[in-house]
Image 1 (tube, one colour):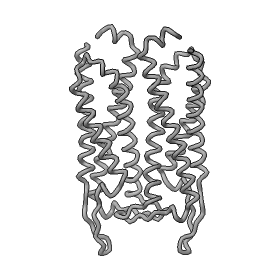
Image 2: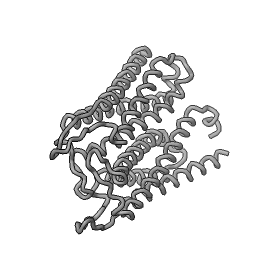
Image 3: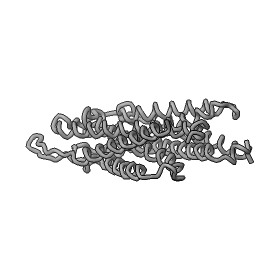
Image 4: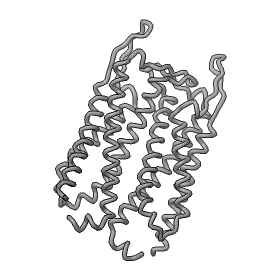
Length: 163
Length: 163
């Protein structure tokens, strides 16, 4: 029983790692050249601070996710992992929110500020950003579930007796 | 000792409540009329989805913060409070990130997307948004500290014996 649980947790962490890693890579490789009324421009993630933050946050979370995989199951460091899970879940969540806010302006524009939507001109770029956001979102959800499970575990005296 | 601790925690929750409440109010009351090359426009928080999300998230967190204040100290619901602290800290953090991303475009613009900065035209509005973001940030930090403290508490057997 304890083994199945551990395997499930490992699988969840692997999925979270895959999600954050692919989010970072998909966002980092997103770029498209387009021309708009004879003005050519290149849409690239590093033109937007929120997207840069998204790539960095997801890359850092991926490194953390990789390191945790190699932590021995009896290690006392697992206590620290709960705290780090809190921090990294927040980091990923906040990076998604920031990127999503900008992506929303890119898609719909903001008429009161005079910001025009750009997704019609750089459709491929927008799709790639959307993919990265979905991957990041999946990663954040998995981390949130892992975190809630860890908190539940700390409470549950039965679990402590079983291991 | 236990009483001082409880007083400190109450004070922290009061501060967090004040921070999120003022963040919501300051953002919700931010609006300014301005004219730009004979075109007059009104900058208002509800023109921007990210700012609307910020107001709603901080208002909801304030209601939660208020309700927690009236929870009896011996209640079993305090266990649920840790989970809710996780959820609301994330909610507030993500709303700040989204609003900050938009505020950054408002201040500096995004030349590659052709979005012009608007803060020079609506300085008062921008200052108010900045104030709301700072208040929200303080609230998020306090919630994060409360959360880390709760997690620490659950681990610490000494604390359990003291109460």
